[in-house]
Length: 95
Ligand code: SF4
Image 1 (tube, helix red, strand yellow):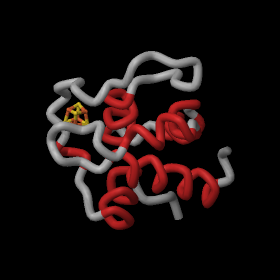
Image 2 (image 1 turned 90 degrees about the vertical axis):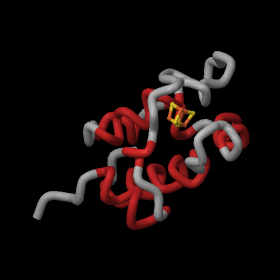
Image 3 (image 1 turned 120 degrees about the vertical axis):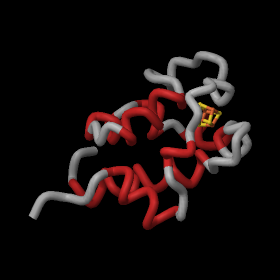
């Protein structure tokens, strides 16, 4: 059986729907080597069910994780979404 979509996984595990993202890009942190794609793109990749998001350095960066809780100016908790993506990566064995 194919895995659920990443949007579904995030919805079930965090109670948040990434479709609420307005692509405003206000969550983008200052560039760091630990971040290969901006947070806005992470959310877009989840929307499009792009499994490559699970191996992005951004998802696995503890620095980004520490900054993510308040990063979204429209109420999404990006920290919990990143943690859910890490868990899903482990479940799928794609780390
Ligand atoms: S700040 Fe929130 S709504 Fe805006 S792009 Fe980032 S995740 Fe989406």
